[in-house]
Length: 50
Image (cartoon, rainbow, N blue to C red):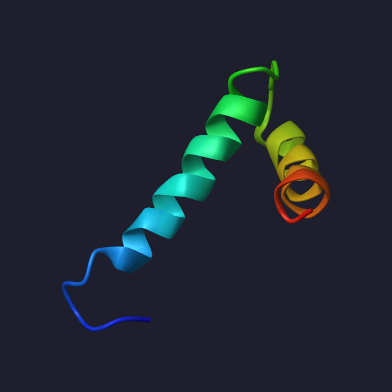
């Protein structure tokens, strides 16, 4: 973590959120929260972290 008020950490968080939304959330037809909690960890491990 950087010092207080430094926006550099926020850029990394914004980047993963954009990728998550564009490549998974907007393309999937989630019906329940259970569907989301089952799918997102797989996306993060298999797609984003690779």
